[in-house]
Length: 239
Image 1 (spheres, helix red, strand yellow):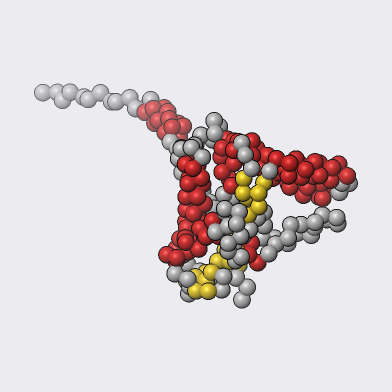
Image 2 (image 1 turned 180 degrees about the horizontal axis):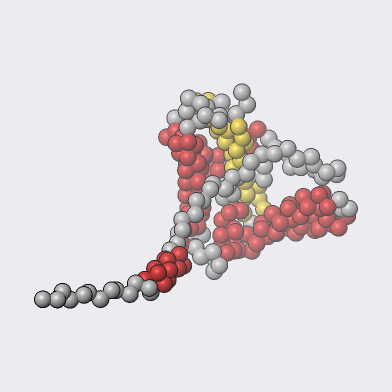
């Protein structure tokens, strides 16, 4: 009895199908992108002639240091990590009422409409007088900050207390500080800022800070960032 010969399967179109599937998955698949931590690194900058920088006092700088043994020092005193949040919070809040009750923490000043208008007028005149682009750029940076203060005052509808413009948290790490401690410190710093912004947001009747829309609530977000600024710079510990 003759054996029946099986017909061959035409696989010519399989390559086309595989290629189409590959394109489909490339188009529809989302790739995770690593997000870094946004921080300012200090650098030396020669100020142009005639530009007067703001005065910085010791009380305006909160120095946090982490050494190679993962020991935490705040203002040259050893501190447990669990106590850092309270210290950072005090940096922002001790004098927030406008009363200078803690001379070791940044001072707050009252920002009013006339003060803002005077500063904006002065800065615009300075910009017009400058022939050096670098000097003009510095005055423009200052002008942008005062424009944000103006927006904040208009959003609040009243004068407000603002932390010293020179107030900053300086984080110093040795090169072999553990990454875990570094991230723990960063998390605490970010948590304090977000908690304070959320508290201020609730106080103003705007709801939860995290629920604000970047487009619809842009003016409120600007105001909260002015009221609770996140000023954190990093530097390497000098050996």
